Length: 397
Ligand SMILES: Cc1ncc(COP(=O)(O)O)c(C=O)c1O
Image (cartoon, rainbow, N blue to C red):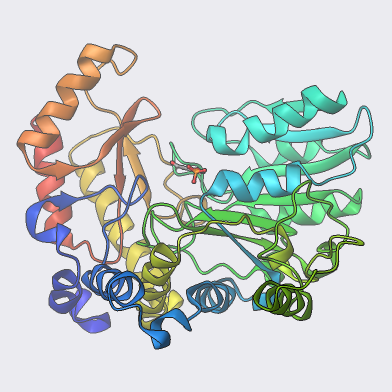
């Protein structure tokens, strides 16, 4: 399988972490490609040791906006750079003009990054949180649809749930929430880099992600997408001097250089996603993120999605042969890159968690206990041999 799609040897060689460990942890923090590491070192040297004019004139933020837009089939103007997923989610949560008793639909499989920003707004504005309960690792689409009514302002959901790996039907959920004039906010950190995500085809209003999991970018990077016609409706309660519209930015800068006053009659905001950006996003980290995104885009989303899907099917098959119980649903359209399975440890007891972690470390396997089981994250650089090795380890636990 791997030879037909990719030169897997070359790919594995591009990720130094894979020489050291059996890597099944991309749903936690992914490995950095060597090219990103090298670029960040070179770029930092150019910036801070050589003070090279050419390097200072680079714009890694613009590079990431363009690459992120290509990845999700949006326009660069709809991209806001962030240091994390939470920042992107807070962007929407903190910018809406909430009305008392509006409701927000969540579910109990969500990672806290997609929960507390909404609860905070509910506390501030007297909103209703509708927490839809999951059953057996799955949040049923019908239960989510039933929770939506005409007071629903936002349905906030992960494309792929962090623990059980369940894949939500985002297109159907978007359709339902749009019927009542609500918005869908998608936490896509567990799907980008695994599944092909087309925000227009899925009709997503806001999407948020970090760059450091399946996208293999540095920690401290991420981005959000805000649908173009929503951009100027959102009133984020922050302003800074680095994301002014470009003409105003130039006026301010020229005034600083010339020792003149700059305009202070009002604070202008960019008309693009840049208007929401926080100041202080590291250029070095975003340079590394651009390199990681370029790497991924060169492998092509369709090819990545089908390779991961085949590897996940193989893994599920092998686990079933060994009679190991799965927490992740088996149907193809209900899963992505995560396979979570039961292990003979009581993971509600910290001592047993530590015991499992020690066994993983001793076997040089990187994977995490989550959702009451062991979570394997299967990425394009994994192989069927990796899967055989981890299944052998699991059956001996
Ligand atoms: C679904 C999901 N959302 C968000 C995050 C992380 O959020 P942040 O980037 O804000 O740390 C994780 C990390 O595990 C996650 O699994």
